[in-house]
Length: 250
Image: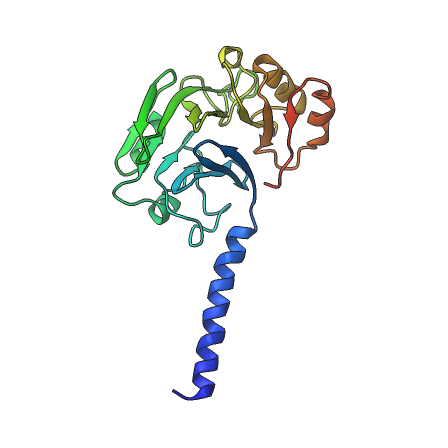
């Protein structure tokens, strides 16, 4: 092989390698130390998240518009909150799922997913993991009370979408999905980390998100799905509450 050809191949290899690294590194993430290892929360974009614990990978509402799924790791679990196109992308699922992946969804998403595991509001499941740990899952309500489409139909009807409470490595993580500050939130107990949506008219205003957070008092709160909403308003509204509000890039 000539030096010229070798150099060209080397440059191509470096390009594709660095492209893959930079794609994943472009997403912010926070890391929490647990007795089972580092729990990483990745903020992919809009309503799309990824959680990692050692070799375990959990994707939340994976959508190609938000994430480069050619560079992100494959899924052990996927959670779909509801069937809207900014939360359910069947093509993204094909990129990260294999025969072992468990895809958990609400009823109205099931016909667009291969081998779905359907959970309704109020359902719970426990999965044994390979390292002896467990993943506990609770499906909780996510819906609109106030905000509706023309004609009086809520953007997110009661009983359709799911929020999820995931208990893993000693942490209880609440991913609210698309919802307003509904009364059921007050029944959530011992939430370590919460993700609350904050974009009108589909979910909540900063004032509604602050009221939601105060109803169940998570230790850490990440607003997500906030679009162009001024997140500083939420910081002001929850000042002195004892809730650690963290603003991240979505």
